[in-house]
Length: 276
Ligand code: NDP
Image (tube, rainbow, N blue to C red; front, side):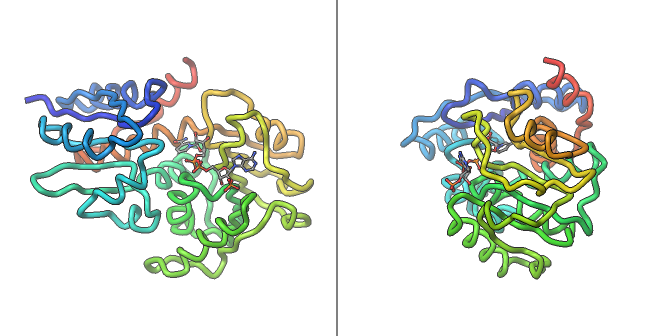
């Protein structure tokens, strides 16, 4: 019988996940279908229960349900545990396994696809929302010289950094929280924008000089072409610019691995989405 998977969110019509997973299934010869589920804002649990009852095998979870997905999982992977958020659910008998593949997707894109090693680099992560929560653990695993989390609401960045001080064996001595203004005089080789500012065509108030010569500027936002963040990075001397398409495809590949035990090739799918 063909196995069923889906992406669940609200809104979800824009999601590229059905295209990505159909490509992965074709490429790996896996017998599955992948749908979209629009869950009512108050109806996430019921929609998941319904999908399981119909024999569904797994879900990708997107805004605004990643926290609720964490809560309904009765087994969790280490990255879900670190992030306190789940973007991948796998159903097996009574087990609801939850994992977070967003950060692994980000790190794979930066290191493998873009060829930028994180080890020993100074990394700035802008934003402290859901996407940043998933990114901090895998970024620390890649052993940067330091990781600064900067956020408009400083308190949120501090709480996020604090959470990782207690996380499993991660190197956290180099992890700090900051406001944007306090970054003046500091330089980073990798600057990642995980804020949703690009959605409104704006950019957090970064001081001049934050982008080191030869730096990578990475905007998790995708589908918008040049964002104000990427424009700013270019004007301030960043060498390489990237949007979040690669991360999106890499996190999907990691979910596919969690469900099917095989990791698909991502390059062609990334290229197809970039060309669309
Ligand atoms: P959240 O709503 O959880 O967090 C939003 C963050 O953006 C907060 O830190 C918020 O700061 C900050 N922010 C919003 N507007 C501004 C502004 N004008 N100036 C400064 N800071 C601002 O969103 P997510 O973390 O879930 O998503 C963030 C982005 O990442 C989205 O664009 C999303 O599309 C993208 N994303 C991409 C993925 C991919 O695979 N490529 C995966 C997941 C997300 P404050 O705390 O002060 O409000």
